[in-house]
Length: 270
Image 1 (tube, rainbow, N blue to C red):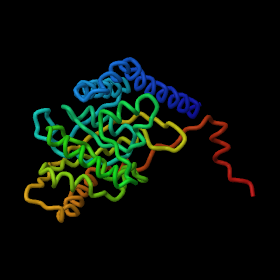
Image 2: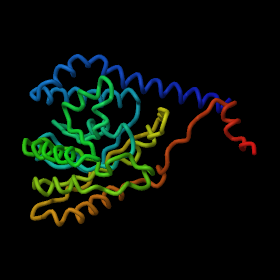
Image 3: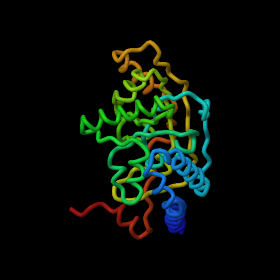
């Protein structure tokens, strides 16, 4: 009976979370589509996205703990670098970082039906396999910083294979950008996102979990040259990894209806 209730509870919570994520977008879609078409509307569109994030996280009932000095809208621009462990990473950062924030995401995000084109027009997308796309994204990012708009970059480039335990090697782009623009790097750790929504191929797995955002001390790039990018990259990597929680390693296990769970536990016939 306990296994049945657990399975039903997981299905209900997944449905609840999905509903309260999709509904705000559906309601605001006409406004988002209109605002995305002109650069002048992007600030207002980001405000909608931030409210969407705050509302959805509230409806999911998950507490969000922020450690370190939380950014203020009046702070000078910087490059935020964060670990990438879940599809809710962007959502949580939109809630935690106030102001007109920019973000760099993979080009595949712009191809998501309905929502993707809006994201692609409002934020920066990059195809990491294309040198032209990488170069163009860095130009846009530099322009964003020059306009006073901070940017978030996931230097791993993809979701980690061992979220909460190990990060993928960092790419240099974010650190070269910060040095070229003369702005600080602010490392961010999100140690629990994969416990709420892990990246599992072929299925949507949602589990109730508290969330946490750790803002580390800014790392100055004043006086640095591009030759210092590897050292800066390693410094940010170590700062982010320092806030991982050993008890949060790994992803939550799948749940099965009891009859299927019994079958899954049986050894394969020879």
